[in-house]
Every structure is written in structure tokens, then in C-alpha cells.
Image (cartoon, rainbow over all chains, first blue to last red; front, side):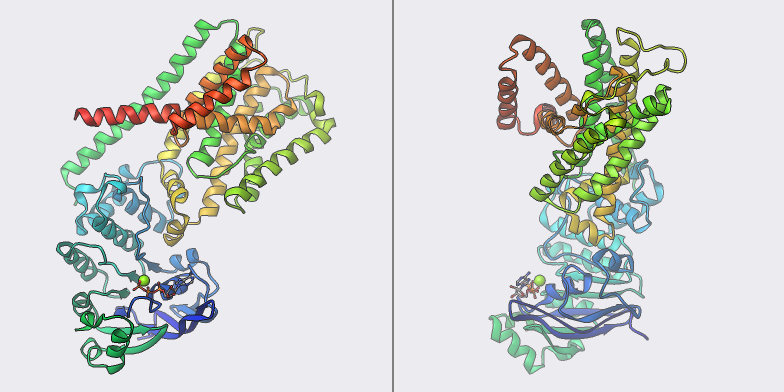
Length: 254
Length: 333
Ligand SMILES: Nc1ncnc2c1ncn2[C@@H]1O[C@H](COP(=O)(O)OP(=O)(O)OP(=O)(O)O)[C@@H](O)[C@H]1O
Ligand SMILES: [Mg+2]
């Protein structure tokens, strides 16, 4: 199948430090990829570069064959490239329902409407209720974000991304900060995604990675050092060395 | 499936908000009646208050709801006032409703212009741009004296009777009623707008524009649109001022008026339409009473009041009271 999402020779350095050093990868519709790597490997920077939150020094990004390297973040989202943030970016005084409704309305090009309230729009509310319910936020849907726990804010962050109905979804550590009892909700929400959606998930929780991914990419010091099946990743000597070399993080890959 | 309970909770929330809207309208109309009974000889002040309230509401839209820093918002008000005055004096458009339309149109154009310029910067540079703009507008109106009357003001505005029935009398009754109805209509419309999807988008932009971009919406385009809406509201205020006073002076396009409107907004509380109204009423009454009692030191007293509010009620008069009421209600539950 042809690539829905493609990155070629992406480079970016900060003050001489090559944080993204010649990264190339391609994903087909339906791919479930995990991007792992030690802290500071450049995973978030990679997401920032491909979504237009940072400008690369060189390289290109393509969605469905179209070169989007020159597009701003907004244009990329409108072409179906959606991300979630590692540190939640939510509106403290708004409710979960408002967040998801805003995403749904924006996706449908109706967020500029001057009149009408989303609470009175049945199709919007149906979608909001569905997504919010899936992530277990129903009881909190009309509370302000500042009043709900961080773990639940993480779930809302994912709900917002899903509400945009992406073609390519980049999740930056979706389970970090989510209580163990709730990670199942994330997995279930991911399992319910349309089969032709391409998902790349950055994650440190290896159990989650192994259950989710059919392919694992390992990034270390800005370079891809492994790209292959989950069963091979723990055996790879370079991967072991990368984790041992940076931190005593070997337990993650155990 | 949304459960029955959710649906009920929503309906309940909606009804309560709707109730607040109605209450707000009744408060405006009630205050208007009280003002009329208390100050039958000072309707001009009350009418000016309604016009300025429109300016402060308009400022609240961009500053309170969207977080734009501006000390030049009278540009929108003044342009509206001149547009409706020039329409009357130079083009013979003396029907008050048409003059109002001209004022709104002028305000929208000024809003578009100011928005496009001011929104290029953020924070302090944005503030400086807004100050530069109001000075430019002021100077332009001063120089174009064949159209604006320059520093003498644009005189000779003689509006027809409202709807052909109610002449603008010497006591200013028609102008007052016209102003109050205009304010009530604008207020009701704005309540809808701030709660619409567009209103949610604006609140989001104020807090985190990067998040909004990651949702695929353009903060810039949204804010320019809000500036145009704000221009319509301020322009309506300017037109009301032109129609009721029958002159337009350079002071309607001044830095002083811009700064004062910001003071009124902070006094009442930003980010709420009631706050904007409260601030206007309190400031203008205070100004009127204190300047009559002590013409030399009234500004000092206004300064003192403002410092007291900022220090002890940082959310503004309305914001602080509303917050206390909410806490009290929650404590009782
Ligand atoms: N804007 C920036 N300016 C300078 N250095 C930066 C910037 N952003 C990231 N870096 C550096 O780039 C490196 C990679 O950071 P990045 O956040 O991409 O890592 P990560 O793989 O996401 O790590 P983590 O697992 O901790 O989230 C770090 O050394 C970081 O200090
Ligand atoms: Mg990271």
C-alpha cells in the first residue's frame, strides 16, 4: 500500500546539537507504530517538526503524497495530520464537553458560527457523548478542566485529537500520568479507531507498546536505530546499548 | 448514547443560562427606568453612558474574551461617530436608523483595519501599536477638517424623528429611549455570540493559541472577525453619541477615551458583559458626582478608586461580587 505519511531526511539542530538527525520513515493507512527511545532522544521534537510546530532545517514531510513541508500547523491539521501533546494543552475554564464539541465543530467547518449553542446541536452532542463516554469522562463532562484530575485531563487530550477524525494520528505519550486503572480506556479507544487510520504512538510503557504496535521504531540521539517488529526490538544490541548508555532505563525494555 | 440524565442536566443548564439572560435584560431596562425617574433633567448623561457602555462592551470582546491588549479602542467608536455624522452632514442621510447603520459600518471597517494591524504583534508591542493607531486616527480626523470639522468638531447633525414619529427633543427623551433599546438589543445579541461556537473558539485562543492551531483553526482569522464584531458594537455606540449630541468631536477618537474605556472595563471586570456594564455605570456616575463636588481633585479620587479595586478586587467589581455569590451558593449546597 502507498504511504499516507512520509518523512524524508528530516533534520533539526538546536545550537549545534542535532536533535533530529536525518530521520526518514513512512507509514501506510492502518499502521500501528510505536516510537520509543530514551528521554531526550528527540521524540517530541520529531512530532513538533512534522506537525509544523517547529521548522526543520532540512528534509520533507508528505501526507498522501502531497509535500506539506511549507504548510503551517493549521494546514497540516486540515489535511488530517493530528497530534496530541505530551504535556496536556487544555483550556482550564472550559468543560470536557466544550473541548470535544469545539474540535467536532472545527472539523466540520462550523466553529465560526456566531449563533447557536453546541448543547442544542444533536449530532454534535451525540459525537461528544460517544467520545467522552469511551474515555470514561461522562460524569465530568460539564465540569471545568481545572477541577478534574490530571489523569483525566490526559484522556481528554486524546478525546480532542480523536474528535478531529485524523488520517494520521501522532500521540505523544498518551498514557503518561494516566492511572494504571485507566490505561485500558486508552487502549480500547485506540482499538475502536477506524482501521485505515495510521497511528504513531510515543510511549515508555512497554506493555502498552507490545499490545498496541505491529512495528516499533527506536530513536536515540536523534537517529533511528531500529525499525522493525516488536519481537525483535528487545534482542537488538544497539537498542539495549542506547537504553543502558543514557540512563539505567533498561528495565523499560526488559 | 447520551443518557436521559445528561439531557436533563443540559436542558437545566440551558434554562438557567437563558434565565440569566432574561434577568440581565430586565436589569438593564429596570436601571434605565430608575435612571429616568431619578435624573429626568440629566438624560444627556445617561444617554452618553449608554453610548460609552457600548464602547466598553466592544472593548471587552477583544480584551476580555480574546486577551488582546489595546489602548486604542476609541478608534472604532470614533470612526462610527464620524461615519454617522458625515453621512448626515455631507450626504443628507438623516434618518437615525440609517445613521446607525452608517456608524456600524464605519466601526466594522475601523475594526478590520485596527485588527489587522494590532494582531500582528503580542503583548507590549501590541499595546504600542494600538496607541500609535489611535493617534493616527485622531490626526487624520484633525487634518481632514473639510469632512470632520477638525478641532471645531462636526456640527450641524440634525437627525429626523425616529421612525418618523419621535422627534429628538430638547430634553433628550427620545435619544435616551433609543439608546437604552439599542444597548438592550446589542447586549442580547452579544450574549448569544459569546456562547456560540465562535465564542468558545475565542476563549480558547485567549488561553492557548497553539492548542487552537493544533485543532486546525486559525487564531488570526478568528480574532480579526471578533475585531469586526467589536467594531460594529463600538460603531453603534459612536453613532448613538452622534445622534444624541448632534456633534462629533475629536475627543471621540482620542487616546484619553481609549484609556478611560479600559479603566471602566477593569473596574467592572473583564471577560463578562455584566462587568463591562457595571464598570461603565460606576465610573461615569463617580466621575459625574465627584467632578461636580471637587472639580480639582476628581481625577485623584478616580485614581484612588481604581487602585482600591485592582488591589482588593482584582476581578473587578462585578467579577468579585459574582465570584462571592457563586462560592456562597456552592457552600450552601
Ligand atoms: N526548543 C528547544 N531548544 C533547545 N533545545 C531543545 C528544544 N526542544 C528540545 N530541545 C532538546 O532536544 C532534546 C530532545 O528533546 P525532546 O523533547 O524531543 O525529547 P523526547 O524524546 O521527547 O524526551 P522525553 O521522553 O523526555 O519526552 C533534548 O535534549 C532537549 O533539551
Ligand atoms: Mg517527549
